[in-house]
Image (cartoon, rainbow, N blue to C red; front, side, top):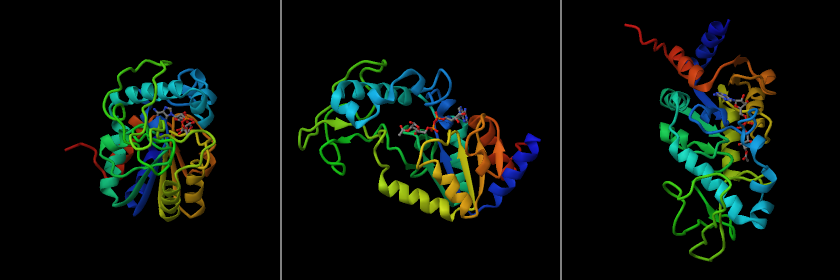
Length: 263
Ligand code: OAD
């Protein structure tokens, strides 16, 4: 049965002219980056989002919030893209009209070779000045390379903006904040225009990102989901492939373009 579903999904993917791939934390799980809501290992089972991922939390304790982001950035810096990220980069080379949209704040899509992924929730690698949203943060120190101190829970004072001396904040979207407007607009436009939307490794419970597969389905696209668990998106999807990204995506891409590896 799974083989039949995979082949049907591969036919849809292989004949599509515009593909959107929407990813969540599950795409990076097999690279060793923890998800948010998976059982005991998810970040929100171990850490309090209200103390670490809101504007109020940063105002109350900037060192704690910056230190937590530095710890996450260190983990991501040590991680490598997995075969799921690589398969998505291959889709982009096969289907010129394809767009990768991610909720992730890591840079594993870029390091796998995906061009210009849309980051709906910002990036751990794009800190900015708190004083002005559009003001790029120029500062000495920790936005590139391996952070100095990676262990969890350690307070690290955020740097100061070189132009105005205000605090520099992580470049991620916090709870209660709007998504970056240009990113959301581009994502919705791509979803409206695509023939196939592949949603990978997202719980589909965080809005507005979770609307994107629904927008694509309403606009007539076939939505294919890759996830080892059922999600609220199951009912929106034409095909649900139960499995992990690093297993299913390479098989899907190989089947879509008939790369069996056999002589
Ligand atoms: P979640 O942690 O909510 O969900 C991860 C999903 O990935 C679940 O549905 C898992 O079943 C699935 N999964 C786990 N391992 C997988 C694997 N190896 N291959 C494929 N799927 C796998 O993560 P997101 O849906 O990305 O927001 O979370 C959405 C947002 O909630 C995040 O961007 C973050 C968080 O709060 C912000 O920080 C703004």
